[in-house]
Image (cartoon, rainbow, N blue to C red; front, side, top):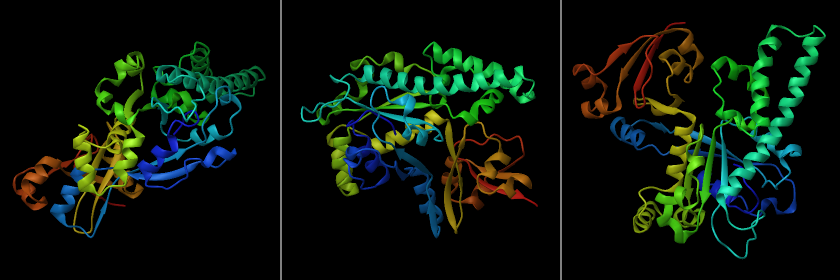
Length: 358
């Protein structure tokens, strides 16, 4: 999680992960990042657990990293940004709340400006990395020290550098899987999907449906591999202190169908192109997140690599069919449980048992 100072990053981190990190932790200077785990809310898994009554129920989870607030002009030489280079996506917390006692480091409240400023900071950090790598590649090839991989990487790195020089993030380039593999080791920040989290006032909760228009963010919302989500950390703090029944009533009073935690995690899943399949039984019901488009053997590897190596087939039943049948045995009787081979593309909500031999 990234953002300028005093925008609500650590408050949101605590809400998502259940941590109790002091919100002024970074006030004294440099510090290690906060790292926490958020369980993915999953009504489907809860219903499967109610059906199978397993000894253990395991939800999917998301790891969050909260780093020190970034001041404008610091990105190129920032050491703590290194903590974000290995994440799958970046969540940029953007201030939209008003509080005269908390001075915003960037001046008047302006989410559109802050999104653009932070993007520039990340572009500059990546530009430095790309320039140094391109110089190294050219030097290697000129001295005949380069290999075939260097020759293949050179045009990809040139494309990245050209985009960065044109103030265009790498995430917006049309790169193939092989191109992405060639630059993966450099962990470009602007190559990562970006979720902009607009942190609004409690009084502005009713503006959630129109926040994109209200803050002039329509162009941002249409950019490739970028998503926006409106929250109020102040409201979520209050909700987190309530029991589930009171929290639900509070949300309803505010006209909200779900908490920010639920909306943010769903937005992150969508941005990363993730779906979930399930394994079910008396021992455990568990959710497994995978990329959309994943074939059965690769999905099996998320459980254990032996399942992919010795994959024979997948016994699959869709979530709705499984619930309607009331169990695997009846699903088989109804011909809803089917065998799928190596080319089967796993669907969101599939309940799967993998057959393998090693």
